[in-house]
Length: 314
Image 1 (spheres, rainbow, N blue to C red):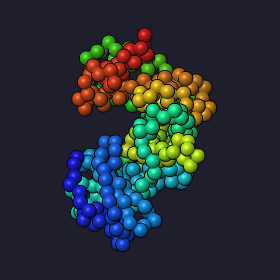
Image 2 (image 1 turned 60 degrees about the horizontal axis):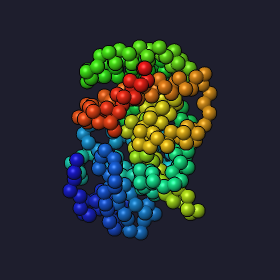
Image 3 (image 1 turned 180 degrees about the vertical axis):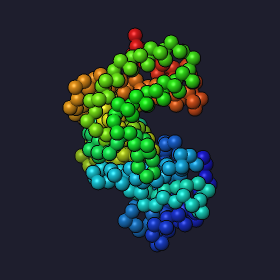
Image 4 (image 1 turned 45 degrees about the horizontal axis):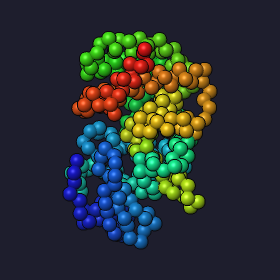
């Protein structure tokens, strides 16, 4: 997506928040799979706002993010406040949201800093706080809540594994590996019964979705959490495994500090559960990257994931 935005259009957008708001400047923000802009305001308590543009699909994208951000606000987490969701296409040809701007830059910007591990621990702490939000069932979150809620973790995850292995077979060319992975997974399905209830899962916690700043004392500090488009209701170790998998893929140094920051887990076999959920996330990520056309041999993408999956079943 690429929109031609000008100051006049931006002014019309923000005046739905407050009629007297005045734009002093705007610029596109780095990263993200959608177009996101910072809007600087003159003489406003907001300081700056964020304009986030949404594609046509999924249709519940804007309302879902606003819903999940509202759940997290009750925990006083550093998340944006959604001020407006506009799906009318009257001012822009696409749907958009206006939300508060958080300080800091994506953690990807800070990964060369000597104190990066401190913020990785804070990521683990943040994830544990997200998991303090209980959910009434397991399932993917849409704009109005859980879509097709499932009462037990076992029912939810067995169906999820069936689906991801079907996609893996449809997209792949190694039926023997698919069978070995499925047998490996099914041998640990009993672990699903150990879940102590569904919690809110961010399902995309990595360096690109957290912000950090240099604090007053000069240390690197977590300053924000963004992007709730993947959120679901799941077992907490499902989400911890996803955060460890995605973050360590970008920086292997992140794994242990995130785990330490998250803290101890009351579970009969945490290591086995993380291994099983990691298998799911690896297969799921391989399917997604392959579907969008990433080179199957790319070591930083599908090729590296296939290597890791083979190592899991040696």
